Length: 427
Image 1 (cartoon, rainbow, N blue to C red):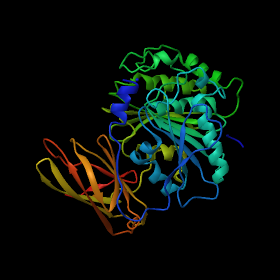
Image 2: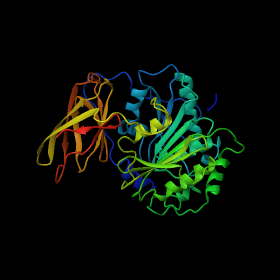
Image 3: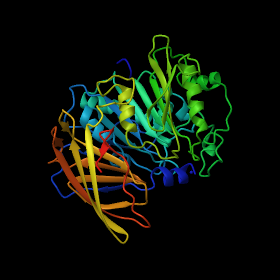
Image 4: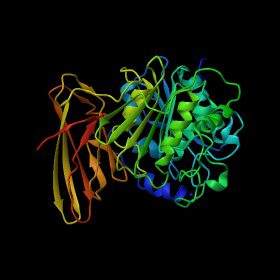
C-alpha cells in the first residue's frame, strides 16, 4: 500500500447555524448514508458514517470529509455537495462525527499532533482502513477535507499520515500543531492565540511541526489546497498565510507563488509549483467571505484538485458557458412564499444526477419542497434530484418547487450553480 468554544460557540453559530433537510415522500435512492458502529480502534470516541454511491469503479477512491464544531457527519452530508459529487464521480465519502468540546475534532492535544499516539486521528485512520477493506477502496487514492474544526483536522491528518493521503483541502483551518494545548482552544472570539493568528513562527518553524508529526519520514507528501474568507473573524484570515508558510516549507518551495489567478469572481488563487511545474500547494482567498466556507462550487473545486473528476488536479472545473439555464419564479405573500425552479440543460451532453446550489441574499428559510431533496445551511441552499428526475437530457428541463418563509424583503437569488457550474439566469 503506497499511501496508507467563538471557536466552539462561534463556529457552531457561524458554520453550522442551520442544517435542515427536507426529504420528500418518494421512493428513496439506493445509496444512503449508513452508520458503521464497529470499525476498529476508536480512542477519539467518534461515530462513523459512510456514503457509498451506487455507481463506482471496482477500486473506488475514498474522501474523508469532516464537519465544523457543533456539527455532525450527517449534517455535513446533507449540507454540502460532496455526496452529489460522489454520485457523479464514483468515490466513497466517510463522514465522521466528533465528540469533544461541543463536537470539535481534536487538533489541540499532544496525542493528536503525532502519528499513532491516539485521540481522533487514530480513530479516523481506523475508518479509512475499514473502508478500504470493506469496499475494496483504492489505497493510492485516499483524500481528506474538512471545514473549520474539520479543516484544522485536515492539516493534522496530512501531517500525521503523509503516506496515506494523495491530497487534502482544508477550509478555514489552522496550521498543524498551531494549538499548543486544550486551553488555547476556547469559546471566545480572539481569545485563542492560534485561531486569532497571534502566533509568530517562521516558515521553517511551521514546517518543523509537520515533520515532527512523523519523525524520519522521507517519502512523498500529499498536495494541499487551502481556503479562507478575508472577513473571517472566528478563525482569522491571517491563518491562511501561516498555513501557506507551513506547507510550502514542507515541500521545500518558496513562499512566493508561481502563479495567481481568479477562477471565479471573488476567488483569488495563489499556486505554488515545484520545478517540474506540478502544483503542490494552492490557496484561495475568498473576498468578503466570513466563517462560512465551503460555498457553492467549492467542494467541486476541491474534488477537481484531488484529480477525481477526470480533468486532473489543476484547476476548478470549467464546463462550457451556458450549459444550464435556471428560471426562478416566486409567489410571495406576507412572510411566506412558494417558488418554482426550472433547470434547463442547454449543453450537448446529458446530465446524470444533479445538484443545484444557491445563496439567499436575504433571510429566506425553506420549510418544505417537492420534486427534489433540499438542505439549507445558513444562507446556503443545496437541492438534489429525486430518484425519478435525476437525468436531464440535452435540450430538456426539470422543475422542482418549495415553500419558504422570510421577513422584510424577499430578494431572488442572483446566481445558481448546477453540479458546481454557474448557470445562466433566465430573465
